[in-house]
Image (cartoon, rainbow, N blue to C red; front, top):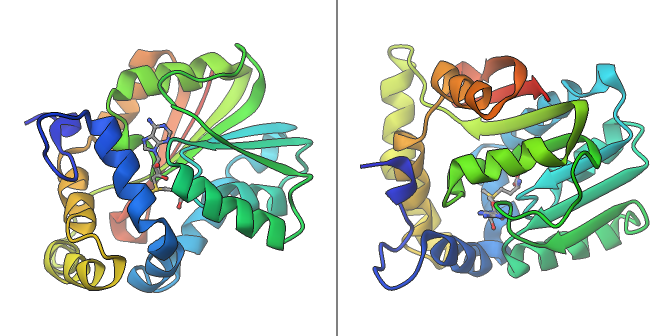
Length: 244
Ligand SMILES: C[S@@+](CC[C@H](N)C(=O)[O-])C[C@H]1O[C@@H](n2cnc3c(N)ncnc32)[C@H](O)[C@@H]1O
């Protein structure tokens, strides 16, 4: 099975994109709480570390793809001296929650949130110094199309930042984490998110998704250069950094 064949609901009459959109629309009200709860708050440390990799080159504009409830965009605003921040996502439900959060923090002049499809971006070529995606690319229906679009909208030498789940490899952490990720997390997710499938999909989609060197090779094939990666929390997730 190819990674993009892993879908939340496995319905035959609609696309993965439609399934992913309706899943995130459904879980949007619970998403922030569950992120923090299921990762014991570590997810915000991962985002902080990820944004830090962009700092040295002092980007002035950032496009955060699959921004969801805008946590990475907000972290970018906190750490970097950005003049333009755009967050985009295919799920109107996630954007709505993100918009409320941005407004509440008085950041609506600084962060623009928009609904859109990462595989067909509505931005001109070379228009951003940095493009990011946290836990987003795994959900794309067509990974190559999404990555090509990220490459296109970057300015020359612009930075790509991807934060994505990976599969821990170190014994016995690998086995322990797998038990949590495969059995405990979907059970908590089922009871709290009102979508029985969403956190099962999370586990399944990570199992087939390319990670570490394999994902780095895909980025190189797309045309990215200076591709590096750094595993976080014993390999639960990985920061990929590259340039156009
Ligand atoms: C796990 S959430 C991550 C949200 C956020 N980046 C974070 O760090 O919490 C994945 C997001 O990817 C979005 N997504 C999936 N496919 C997409 C696509 N083709 N275009 C834009 N967004 C997409 C979903 O709607 C969802 O909000």
